[in-house]
Amino acid sequence: MATYTAAQTKNSGSLGEVLTGAKTFTITNYTSSVGTFPIGYLTLEGNATSNQNLSANANMTGSFGTFTNGIESGSLNQTNRRFSISIFGSGGSFVFTPSATIAANSYYIKGVGPFDLTIS
Figure 1 (cartoon, helix red, strand yellow):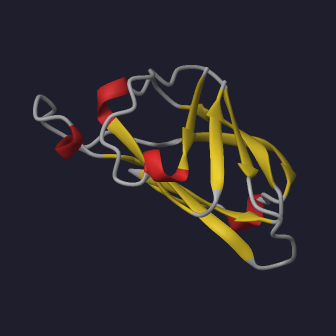
Figure 2: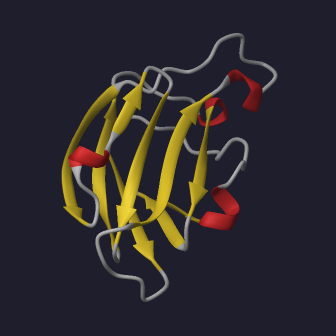
């Protein structure tokens, strides 16, 4: 399990955690913001430039489920190499199961907003 703050995740480079099997992403807003407008955005992106040893961008394809609270499946944007989530209110959680193991040095998180992210 790893926990990241928005400041740590923005343009952070590799995270040092292999993504294999179902992972729960729990996002907590650490301000008192509430309402229907997003308080932040989280993007998980596979990118060879985050590690000079990779020759190709990493694939971010997989399946999603168990969206809770201020994260909705409708706010999910997915491409081959990244997915992004809009975060509302106090945050929430979702499960992402990658189609294949994602090496720790092949992805990074870009986060904008007053939140903490825990991957478990």
